[in-house]
Image 1 (cartoon, helix red, strand yellow):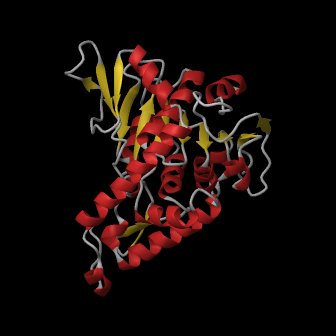
Image 2 (tube, rainbow, N blue to C red; image 1 turned 180 degrees about the vertical axis):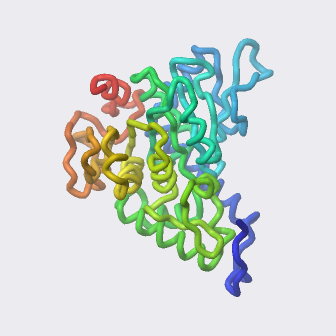
Image 3 (cartoon, rainbow, N blue to C red; image 1 turned 90 degrees about the horizontal axis):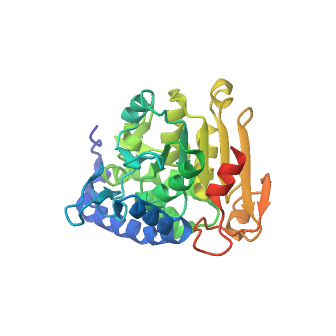
Amino acid sequence: MSAAKGPLSLFEIPRPIVEPIVAALRLGNTAFDELFYDVGVLATQLWLRGSLVDADSDATQTANSGTTDGFHEIGLSALSNPEGSILIVDTARPPYVVHRFDDVGKFIRASKTMSPPIRNISITGVGSSALGSVAFAWNISSALGEPVAAIVPGYGVADVVAQALGGWFGFGFQSWLKQSAQRMLAATSPETARIGRALMLTAPGHQEENGAPVFARGSGSSDVLHAILEEGSGIHRLFGHSKGALVIENAVADLPKPTLEPLEIVTFGCPIVEQPPAKYRQILGWFDALGLLNSWGNAPDMLIPAQHTTNSWLPLSVPVTWLTDVET
């Protein structure tokens, strides 16, 4: 749907000017994902399996590299692409990063027929690029021996505003700020408001104003996850780290009890409000000042000697694979 034209649209900055700026800012955030997620382990494990990660490739399927005999290239389009996607990660079966979906409806339909079935979804925080999202999902898939669908959040102007004003602190405040900024953009600059929202625009039941998407649950990722769960896609486990945990909280807040009952929700680095009858396991590090600040008094089920990062190459990291394996 094309954005409606109003008198304020005369003052809208053209999309070709705004989009490269947003992409450049996402490029910077990807560096934080390399700090907070097991990107090094991901690259090493794929190399040992005969694959290479090209984080700036637009390839959606495993393709022949053409430069290294016997290896395959897995393109994640991670460094600068502001649009979101859903990536299926399966550590037990090649080609490991199996599918990329840029359409939520297509993912929902495909997930009902895939073998093995898709029963797990993971969501990251911090920069939330494809690189960090796949690294987090890789940890979980390694523990479960099952495929994991990693939701790669879109990154638009509203995210830039929230990040500039709120930093990483006040995750709940950031959701409110991002939601308000997105509505203002929809009212004044609808074409700009569509940048970074391509995945959300494919979610069943998504909301629009003035021809531009607006958030119903604080962020586009929460709206995407809510749509997936509401459509009865067979998902049973949700894993969130940092702001990804808050995405889950907002997504499940108004789900009916029959949909919540089979869900098992695991959070790392940000305890959230629990919605029974879903089952929760919430893990927080003793030295995780960021997670403690953003927990808003929500108590974890487990305190461990760790900080906020899940990068196992750093000291006092959250051992995601071990914790997932122990608790399943």
